[in-house]
Length: 159
Image (tube, rainbow, N blue to C red):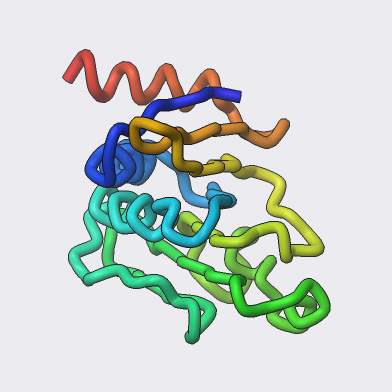
């Protein structure tokens, strides 16, 4: 697990930008945190980092928002209103497996409701602390965390 201090909403947005510039197609973000913790702010930065120009809002009522016009598609899923039994028939696996949709990045708010997790993901838990927020970032076993960091380092510090 990697712990990151986020002093304000801009830091949360900037973390999203960094992820959007470096994540590969087929990557999923499992976004955890209380209401108002910054999950949607992070996804807005993610979209910006992916080159998506459309405004990004939380799809709480639509459940899924698709943003196809970036360096790859972004699928933003918000499961807040659902229970695990309600999710089974949504076939959400098709998004992270690239079945019937182009493989992109999948950002899932409230992933604790999922009954089946993607194989490759970063779990990002956002929470408030005395001086802003913090993010705990934990990769799945299948996520190439070292390769991701190496690529990000090359992109930021050597370009």
